[in-house]
Image (tube, rainbow, N blue to C red; front, side, top):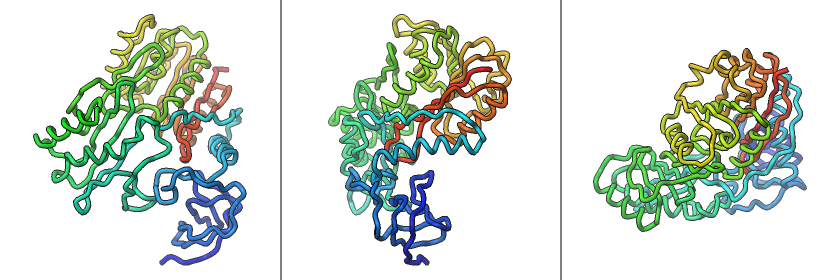
Length: 408
């Protein structure tokens, strides 16, 4: 049973929650505040801010505090920026790594260009939005200020597409992505292959002028191929494909990668996805692009063939977790980039540590696994030249990082 008590917030945790002695973690609080909370175990629910921090500001979203999406909209930007940079510094320090960490780059840009909304049916209504924080309740969303303008209508679109599925599923998720040619919508969940659903989705796609609607990644209605730009190239986006959260985030990280590789003539891009780095690198270097995602590699290859003036781009499908490139394969490249999922690239880092590659650029969305992989490379003789945190997940506890290493 929860107990009502007063606590002093001493720090901000790595998940964006205030930390009191115990430790007890209380969302939506800030360091230096006195708060009244309902405590259960190691977690607290904020009841009242008794003494607010001078760093507390009004959040830009009226749903903040209920919505489970953002963690720190209530924090003044300077303190927020220092905390995010500190997440990277702390992760490096835990691995006894000394490296210059640059200032946090704001890469929110126009806002998030993709969003996953939950859709369910209740009382004859179609609801669409985010789950409330640490709850199974759905917040029926009207708007989200962190989305790019092209996604302003995403909740309403999700409800309209949900109406096509009503009666055939209890709930599902919908991934909406803004592309150069329109919105791409992928419905995900236990949705039956029913002709009525297909017909209703087709009518909704036309009415809403959607580029494409798929179900669990399988092609359904494609009115226009969703396209993205990467330098000179245009990428045909596979259904449900991974891409960076904001266009500004992708452009910022690509710039840092290109600056680090310099005049390298042969580059390997590992965990390349659909090629946001590889296609830009190919404007000045021949590129080997490796990933396990076959549709993403096909899209990359198609984009490379269609773009004018690119140097050769070779794609290879390979599971780099189980079958990383070996030193004899790596040594033919002057620079190697890796941008793995949150789990990091431990197996590949161990092979890189035994290679003779002059420059390695590590891109990561998780400071802890990045620090682990960097420690492996440093032990193998690399020196960390610089680390740059990039903030494309505004108001969240996630931070992207680009680290540049040179062989000693």
